[in-house]
Image 1 (cartoon, rainbow, N blue to C red):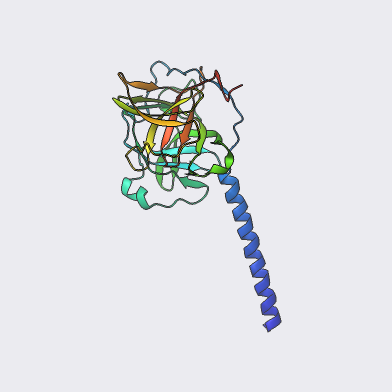
Image 2: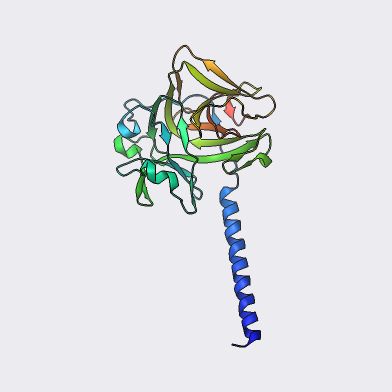
Length: 265
């Protein structure tokens, strides 16, 4: 092959690589883009059905959550079932797209009862309420589905797991989950409108009150006199939570709303 043909072949190869890289970048950006919230729900608590079972057969917190997000389906899975990923495998395991490893989070609540997967029928019973998927050779419980995302005070401060100082990310999720905080101490996030959130997980295992929050927001340590029990919102068969994350990778579940619907009418 002469020099001219070599240059042409090289140019074609570079063009193919550039196009492939651009297509992959566009695909990646579409996966991590904020998902607009298209639903609204009543901010009244949803009660657990009588006789509902808890995933795993207990009402205890696992201590550490090992979760993966499917960026195409927006389902979030937690290690569970007959063959969950071991802790030592989880630490260094790398998932390929569209799977994304959620940041390892140390849980702060004491009681946990997950009573229905988001793709299970509302009138399910027993094992039919829990969906198990096999992913990368291990079993995972379908825990929740992301139904909308936002960033406050504006969209520029959030990208994937990263939340800039002065911002919070807000994920609205479908999750049928009861959580109990025994106390005596909880860590409460609040805005200036009457919305309240309780910290449920940290990346380090130690809550940090020095998060840089949006104007008007506060994070305080609060003593409770009796257990705080969280149930999802929506009423009837609906199970929704707002999950907030700060710039220190601390996460919170909303448990008090300022309005009768979310988003506010």
